[in-house]
Length: 371
Image (tube, rainbow, N blue to C red; front, side):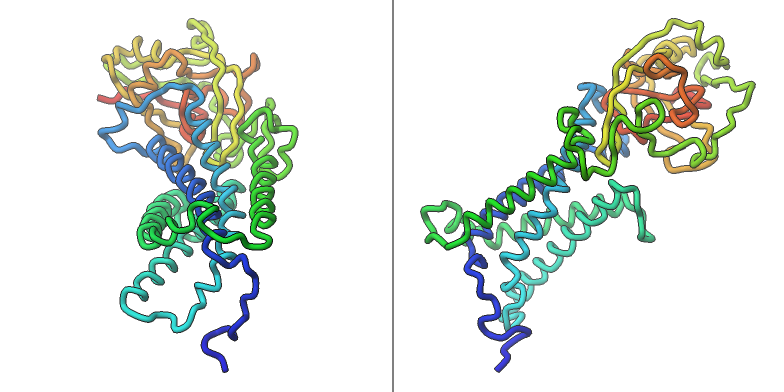
């Protein structure tokens, strides 16, 4: 007789047991925690609350490159770990009766929310690395709140399961199960394989095995990948009389020829994008701090940068005071010794250390000093 959706004995593998689940849970929990913390860092750098913006650090130079690279690496590693963990525990998901008490029903509801949030978070995050958005809701905001739902559900689940986890935390406290070591080794190998073949889009010394990553650094105009081309942004044609507007206590306009005659500086800085890829280049141009000094900006002033783009979510960005004052923050006119191409922001773009690529505004039209 059926007592639930499956007959008795439907789950025959000995690996559907607590010790295997605890080991996989440790690995998966570590990946999700790293993914959550680095994702929170990215969110705060992209959209800081007003009290945090003046305190955001512009150093280390590669800070965002490292944290966002870890975010995508840990997120991709969590995908096979989640599959293995769900395979191990899925007989429990179909236990019968589905709810034995109110507390048991609440526990199972929490597990359902946790599993749904983690799967949706990993799925949308992976598709974001491909820049494919087959859904009607905004990705960044949804991804942010799903992360809180997933991490909250995880903490509640750990609190409920703490006694069981404690009993099976150490190998010597549980009996040996045939095939456990081989299964865990296979899962570890799968995680290692997807990590090694995707992390090269961020980690330079792994680029030789960068086989599955959605982006290959070194490809694109001037050897730099481009997320948003001039054609996509609608800025293919730059006005022949283009002049940068610098708005401050002493506002001025300045053309490209005069910008080239100002003191020029170079900095090796990465373009690091939210999709997880990054690549460094040698940028040349005028320090933003020098332009602000000429405009009479007070010390500690933040900056609003406006692009020639007609529309787009990042057409306008803000440079908090630490970035605006950093001597490495440039209004770049060149990259690797060559004039900027249209896709890289000709005639001028912002390049700053420890900053998401979407905020490195291209096709700059206006720099405005903020109070």
